[in-house]
Amino acid sequence: MASATPAIVLRTPSFSSRGSSFNGTSLPAAYVKSSSLVPAKNSISCRALKQADAEIITALATRRQLALTLLAGAAALTSKVSPADAAYGEAANVFGAPKKNTDFITYSGPGFTLQIPSKWNPSKEIEYPGTVLRYEDNSDAVSNVSVIVIPTDKKTIKDFGSPQEFLSQVDFLLGKQAYSGKTQSEGGFDPDAVAIASLLESSSYVSNGKEYYNISVLTRTADGDEGGKHQLITATVKDGKLYVCKAQAGDKRWFKGARKFVESTASSFNVA
Image: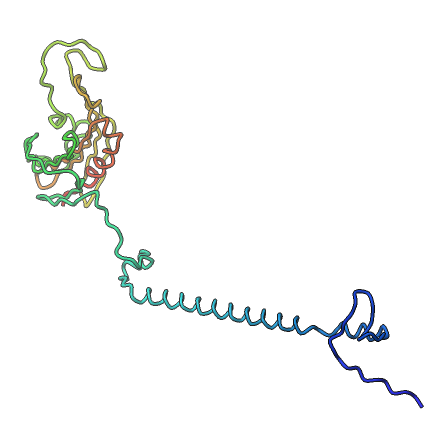
């Protein structure tokens, strides 16, 4: 009669590093290999804890993402953006209205508009006949702007001729030489002259059906301490009146930031 195969009882084995004993009883090699497949209770517990930790971390991350999504949605609903602003990308500005340019203020005069530096103050000085406006820099009166309106029989600015010819007819804007003594020719000045004007640039353009002249002049005097004056003249004609805007700054301040304000002021001059 064949002997029956003994039943295998799974217990926590006690193996030596090299032996194959079970409670002091030797086992066949096959049984030793089978026993090595049985996981330890400690290993099962560690795996269960790691899996639980991973599930908790995943749940917390999901809740955090959901909270951030809800906050973003609430901000988008509470911000009020007009369709016009949204068209220009202002929808991204959820913290308030866009910043405005505070460097200039708009001045509306009799028949014209102008952008004036916000730090310039009104001046009562009348330099030229027909002056209807004069503003100057708080800290430097050499930097200023004037608007002159005088009668004319011309129909358009081009009736004065070229920009250079026009300038020769309104040269009083550049200042008259008061000194009449004898001087030598030096420093770029002609004999008996203590003032000089150099035309740097001139151009013309059309705006709202009216032709304009733009003229840039550098004037210097023998006793000047600014190295000269940059004077920008914008002029046009309407309804029998010559409108002239003259903005200027000293040469030293011109290159220290004044140029931006003078050029912006002169180019903003517009006759309605």
